[in-house]
Amino acid sequence: MKVLGLLGSFRRNGNSDILAKEALMGAKAAGAEVELLRLTDYRFEACQGFGLCLFREGGCHIKDDVKFIWSKIAESDAVLLSVPCYFLESTAVIKQLIDRAWVLAHQGTLRGKYASVLVPYATRGWIPYALLQPNIFFGILGFHVIHRETFNVQGLSETVHDDEALVRARRVGGELAEAVRGGDSAYRSKPGLCPICQDWNIRILQDRKAVECPTCGIRGRLEIKDGRFEVTFDEKARTEYRFSPEVGYNHFTYHIKPSRDYFLRTKDERKAKAQPYKTYLSSKEG
Ligand SMILES: Cc1cc2nc3c(=O)[nH]c(=O)nc-3n(C[C@H](O)[C@H](O)[C@H](O)COP(=O)(O)O)c2cc1C
Image (cartoon, rainbow, N blue to C red; front, side, top):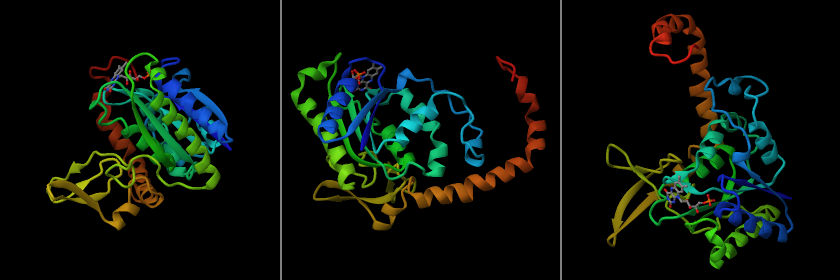
C-alpha cells in the first residue's frame, strides 16, 4: 500500500513540508510505503484549452511533467495533499494542475482512491476558499477525501513549536493508511456544511429560494431554527453533485461532445469572422 505526499508550497522545510512529513511518518508507521513530491519542482504548462485530450487517444499532447505526476498518483493508493493558504485560497500550482486534469475527469481512471488534505495558514478568518482547489482537484479525480485539516501556523517552520499540529498531522497520515487498508471511506475530520465537500461556503441563488454549494453544485434550503441558520440538502441532491460519475458522464455526453460537432461545422465561418481580431493589439504573432 502506498501513500503519496504532494506539496503545494515552494518553501523547503516550511509548514506544509513539515506537516506532510509528519503525516507520512504516521502513514509509514501504519504500514504504508511513502513518497513525497514537491509540485513546484516540476514543470507544468498552462492548459491550452483545445479539449483534444477528451477526444484523442493518448490524452494531453503537452510535453511537461504533468503525466509524471499522474503516473505517481496512479501507482499510489492514497494522496496526502499539503498546501498552504495563499491569498484566501490554495497556491497557484494546484490550480495549474487542476486545469490539466480534465482528461482524468473524463476517463475516471483514478477514481476511488483515498485522500487527506492539510492546509497551514497564518491569519484566522483568512482562509474562506482554502479548501476550494483541493476539493475541485480530488472531485475531478473522484477520490474519497477523508480529512480536511487546517493548521494556524504563521511563520517559517513555526509548526515545529506546535505539538498539537504535529500530533494531528501524524494521526491524519496513520488514519489515511488505515482507511486504505480497511476500505473505509468514512470522513474523519470535523464535518462542514456541504455533505459532499464539507466546505462552509454556500451561495444564495438569484430566486432567493434556495442555496447551493458552489463547488459541488448541490442545492438545499436555508432556514432559521432556534435563531440558527440551518441548511438542508435533500438526499437526491447528494447523489447529483458536480463531480459524481453520472453528472460527469452527462456533462461530457450532452454538453462537451455535441459542442465539438458544432465547432467543427462552423470552423471556417468562425475563422473568417475572427480574422480582424487576430492581429489587433496582439503583442505576439499567432
Ligand atoms: C503570498 C502569500 C499569501 C498568503 N496569504 C495568506 C492568506 O490569505 N491567509 C492566511 O491565513 N495566510 C496566508 N499566508 C500565510 C501562509 O499560509 C502561512 O505562512 C503558511 O504557514 C505557509 O506555509 P509554508 O511554510 O508551507 O509555505 C500567505 C503567505 C504568502 C507567502
